[in-house]
Image (cartoon, rainbow, N blue to C red):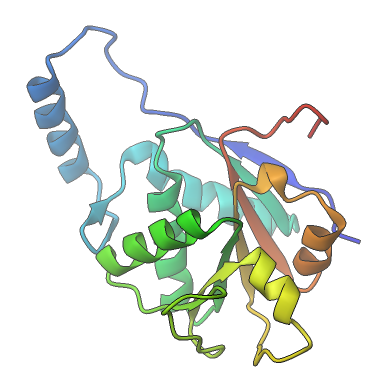
Length: 196
């Protein structure tokens, strides 16, 4: 059985409530981004995004191997996931980003390309090539369930990143998540109509 998930919340940078014009806001954002150092390809993390990595590491150090990173819509969970994936690849950790829905797979593949990450995609009826030995796997949950144990070449990743993990509560999801030692869930809405 999957162990309890521990929640880490991050939010947008606290700052002035004074309204800025959109041009001034963009200049302010660019200046802010040059202060902080983590970049992934063409993406640069903001300070609140950078704080997620040490928070996740701290939870893993405490022995919490199933952690949910909660951030509001627009906070840049995609960029955070790219940074996590880059750090995993650099440390020799195989990581799988798993989600439902073709559009989310296409968006993730596009972002990983812009970030300069090498990856492989598992999704039915697509032009993507599948390499189970890739360090970064972008996976359709439905395709994995349909092919696992049948006609799929597969090697378990060291870490799952679960996009929109608030919907990853079915028995099929749990069966997938039990197979890897560590899981990071990403969501903007950790509470659904059915609870946590």
